Length: 252
Image (cartoon, rainbow, N blue to C red; front, side, top):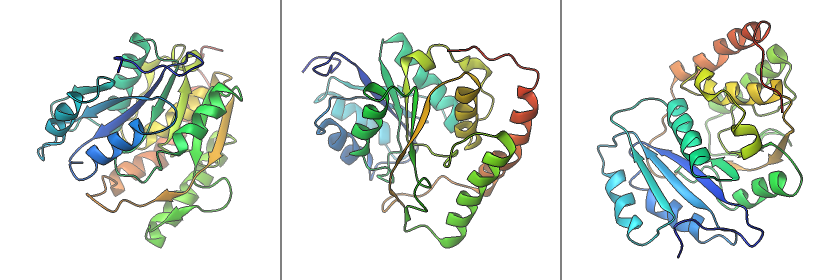
């Protein structure tokens, strides 16, 4: 198999999966994505997992030439992992770049639908949305569901974004959008990073669409969510909105 998979219509797709202690999930998610009907490459960005996640990826690289790995020293934050991945994707010429969790909370089958929203329907940013058609979350504690749902409502009010799931971490970016984004100006590292990326896209005039998905809480491994990174998301949106009053965003 070639080092980069290309679909019949010539577009190249990269799925970025940040990891920290995901040994229970990482092999299964990699094999699942590579078994999809549409070809995707995968970039794992591992933040020094002490459980040996990176070693599993390296073993699988002997089997899959379209599997790539960036190893970082220690937990440097979700946002910085994705920014590194976006830059890598642009350098290597991918047309569409996806964010996805390692733990199957995002159904890999939905990668096909996110790709279609961009490639066929013309979106610059396609968001796998938990809240577009109600609340489509499985096995989350009710407190966390309510916190996430009303945080997204709050973000809509403060920023004016017409996005139902602003903290979603299952998305597809077009190269057209990513290549014009000023990635070094993205400031947030936790879950506010997801809000900042979507807000920046809307300020740039990007076509943003939401694709309804069902989010299923992880079965294996442990969640990386904490009150601290969630509060960053809640309070950070005010700074985002105020900062946008004086910042000039590049336009698509």
